[in-house]
Amino acid sequence: MEREEGATEREDRIRRALLWIGAVSAVSVVAAFVVVRATVGRGSSDPTSDRIQSLIDETNRLLKQIDQSKR
Image (cartoon, rainbow, N blue to C red; front, side):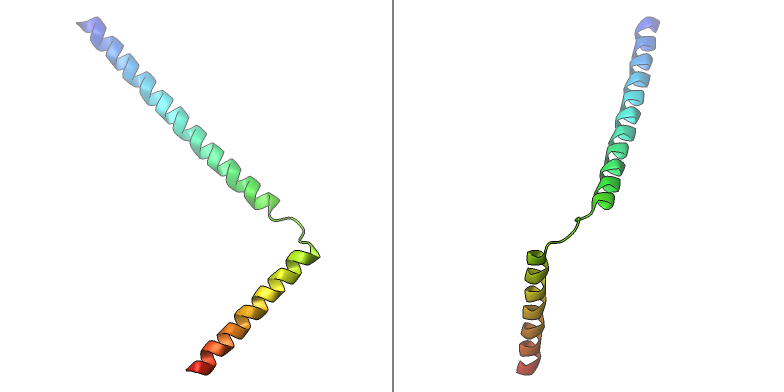
């Protein structure tokens, strides 16, 4: 019986160690992903995207004005 208990304890220690290794690995992967996303960013914007964004902003401004005038 002692041999089985010792093996069980060893297996439990191995499982816990593997769990910690997996957890640390997962956290490292997430941290690396966040750093890469923050570093890369969107890049330079092109004139078409800038124009579309300005039209969206203008539309939102006009819709806000219409909404305020209805009140």
